[in-house]
Picture 1: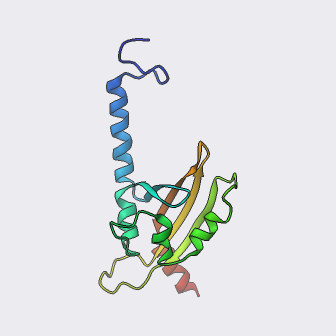
Picture 2 (picture 1 turned 90 degrees about the vertical axis):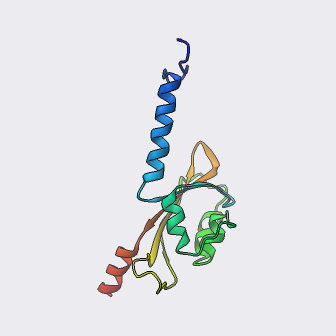
Picture 3 (picture 1 turned 45 degrees about the vertical axis):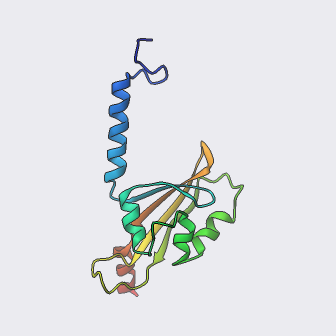
Length: 145
């Protein structure tokens, strides 16, 4: 192994820093909300899109629990995930639709969010929460009714 090379990946320190930087940019620019949380709901990490989408529910800087935030709209998300704490399933909640309170101040604000929650197989205490703007699907559903 050469000096400055990682034994597992074979990449040099500068290549690892470049890969790390690219990964952070990817997460930062992703057009979906990504949240890493503990099984208890404690938020460990979130990208800017997650913060933006969760702000439509009324997330404040003092709230660091994803379930407390979702509880403002529906307690079902917490129940779906925490009902099976010993489950080995990777997907705990798939594309759950949250209808948001009406926000007359922002005409383009999302009216619905789609939430998918997965347990990371490498660490069962870690949840990956994917949040999308499901407004288009919700509006289409209402038009078809």
